[in-house]
Image (cartoon, rainbow, N blue to C red; front, side):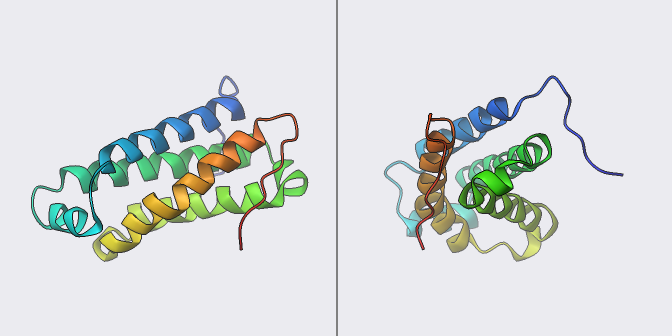
Length: 134
């Protein structure tokens, strides 16, 4: 059975959800170092769990966008790769939870998500094209 998002949900809603989750992750990590993040992961898990939950939401929203707007694959392949990467991360976080590497989560949150946020903004601009860095 293929997942189909509700017809009431639009790709623009999912992009907004992704932007909000990225904003929340940035807020959770503000002022934190990777060492503090890893230590939190070994202690109370509050920050780690909050970051991972929002990354899962980003991946689910990406999957919904790929279902709702398959034309993005041809029109903006870089954005499509971002969506695919976010969804792949979601799969890893939910199904490979025992092997999640906290430093990879940190790197994704601090290096990849700001780029994804810029690409989402570009996707919603009149030009509508995301240029993914190599």
